[in-house]
Length: 167
Image (cartoon, rainbow, N blue to C red; front, side, top):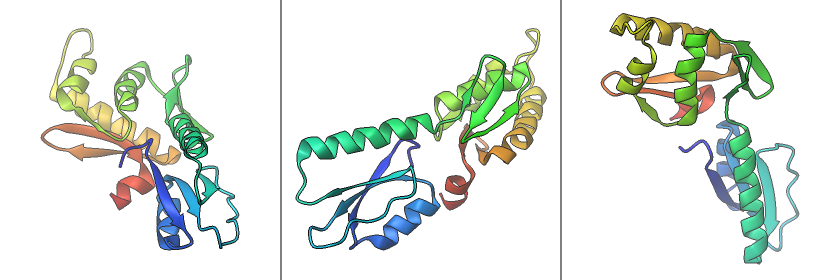
């Protein structure tokens, strides 16, 4: 599932999907049936619009949710501190370099070769260096609700813990 994806849900007909996507922390737009009462949206990952839909209004709400989704991505500041959803952890320069590659493709696979090149220390590269840095990053990001999923042959993907567990 793309980290910036917004799910469109017919309300109240697809209320089970609303609960599922809420638990997975996915952004969602509820299209409310004209005869139904308006839903109460207390989650910043959710918005609603009433049917029949005016296309421009629908597109504006969808775009707004996509922008919010992009802002919910992890980022590293100028002091090498990783921020995600109002939490933060300091990083070493080597961790920050690897995480920048993983954040750029948040939710998607980053090939091991790209990470291997980034893990070079003083021009020296080894599989053990990369594996050690990945192990340290895993421990460092866990309190933020982030995980590194491994595809042993191809590489790693940085994801939200709940989405990674449900994927």
